[in-house]
Structure formats: structure tokens, C-alpha cells
Image 1 (tube, rainbow, N blue to C red):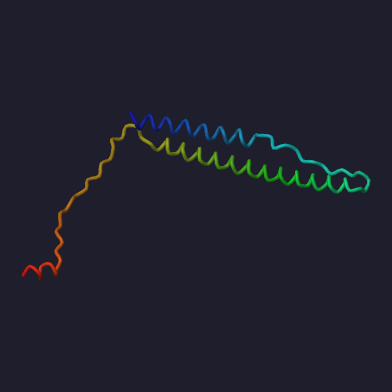
Image 2 (tube, rainbow, N blue to C red):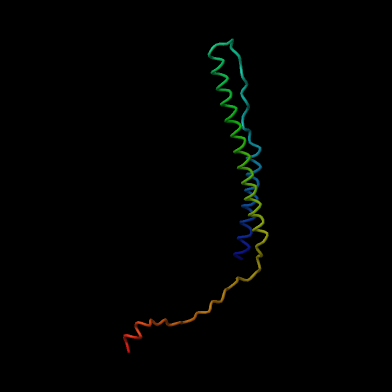
Length: 114
């Protein structure tokens, strides 16, 4: 019963992770800012520098969104694979351990006792 519940839980978590990956990859990252010219004054340089910075931030955001979506999808697939591999009716596996009793003697103790 416990393995069946674990299999069901893994299956649900895997599907949720894949669903989250799809949601993340479809999120809107914004829009690129265009460069404007104001006639050669300082405002043109400031605006173009700000536009370039905004474009760089958006590019990094797209990379992070893609990487996080890929990570979620990979984790979801691995968890689904684990859920498929769990067999609900397998009996638990017990490992037999043989215990040996050994007595260690010290040669110096033996010499002192003689």
C-alpha cells in the first residue's frame, strides 16, 4: 500500500513539474526597447544606454527562463521515470547480516599476564 501511494505521489509531482515547465517557458519576458535620437544632445546617449541595458536584462531573463524550464522538465521526467519503476506489489527487500564475534588480543597484555 505504501509503495502504491509513493508511486502515485511521484507521478503527480512529475506531472506538476512538467506542467510548471510549460507555464514557465510560455511566460512573457517583456519587449526589447528601441533606440531613439533626440537631435544629438546628451539625452540621446542616456536613452540609448538605458535601452541597451534594458535589452541586456531581458536577454538574461530569457536565458534564465529557458534554463529553469529545462530544469523543471528534466526533474519532472526523472520523477515520472521513478514512478514508473516503482512496482506496487513487490515485497520489501530485507538484507541478512551475519554477525561475527571476534576477540582481539593484545600481545603486550598476554606478556604481562604470564
